[in-house]
Amino acid sequence: MPSRVEQAMEKLKFTGVRMTPQRYAILAYLIDTTNHPTADDIYREIEKRFPTMSVATVYNNLKVFIDSGLVKEMKFGDASSRYDADLSEHYHAICNSCGIIVDFEHPPIEDVEEVAVQATGFIIHGHRLEVHGLCPQCSHTLTH
Image (cartoon, rainbow, N blue to C red; front, side, top):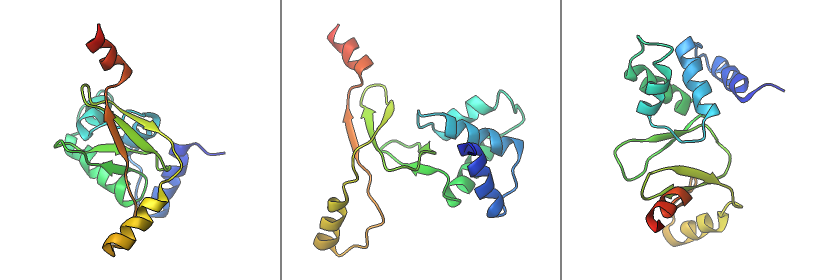
C-alpha cells in the first residue's frame, strides 16, 4: 500500500501540480509531523536542506496543498495559521500556556451541525471543536 506521501503526490500529479524537491520536503514534513506547524516552523525545518528557499515558497506551496485538499489551514486567535495534513475527523486540545496542539478523536458531533441548520438556516460545511487548558507539562510546572 502506498505511503501517505506517495498518495498525496499522486493526487497532486492528477491535478497537474509538478512535484519539486522543496514541495516534496514540505509535504513530507507536514505528513510526518503531528505538531500543527506554522509556515515559519516549516520554513525553519526545511531551509536546512534548501538554504536558498524563501518563506514565500513555503506559503505558496501551502496554498497549493490546501487548494488540492491535502492540508487544512487552522486559524486560531493569534496571527499565524497552523497546518494539519491529518484530514481525518478529529479535534484539538490546545495548551493556554505553551500553545501545543494535541489531536484527539471523538465520534463526530454531527447533531451540532443539524442544530445549527435549524437555528440559523445556514448551509453548514463542517465544524471545528477545540478544548483549551494546560498540557501535562505546563500544569506540572505550575504545581511544583
